[in-house]
Image (cartoon, rainbow, N blue to C red; front, side):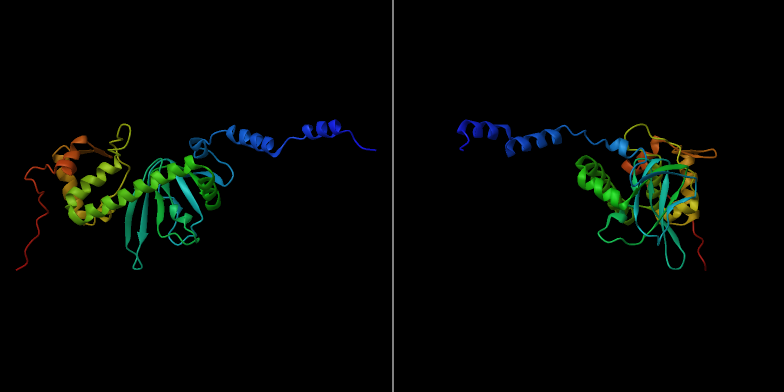
Length: 260
């Protein structure tokens, strides 16, 4: 017995076409909650752990497996390398809202090339390599934040190289003090820099501790810095870096005795 044609057509109309399913999927995608990068970087989650460090504690050490990235939520840290003969040098300083350990995102998992140490009490988010790779791939907003950080870090590295090649040790010291006080960053500068030794400052600018001591005393006499237990950097120090303004212009260096 033949089925009436109208019955067959009515049944066919009850089944949604592929285009209907596709429109439904698009609506679900468009209704997705926007990714909150700030929330992601502020709390624990899958592949993420918040850690607390005291001064002189390390995030990671040179030679460790590079398996995570750290986002510094609060505090200051420094990144150092040690040569084969045991000499230590400071590469850069890290402050809040900076990443450290980004070398772990290389295509092949390798070893840490440097050590990151807390200068003050620090709070940081430790993000596993796999989770960091995933969120960068899936969330363009977060990838944009991380890319901007990498570009800023690259520009800072180039500026450090130019500073080392062309500027006097006194001007290099002034620049490091201003960077530690966060002059040039959004918001008010902190002016008081974290505790740091003259030996560390000498390593960072490529000179001796005696010259750092000489220049620091000179800056204090000129009113560029204050020192009463902690070093306070004043805005007038910017003149040394931007305008190269110092009494007697080229700063005098500690006198060296001539051996006859």
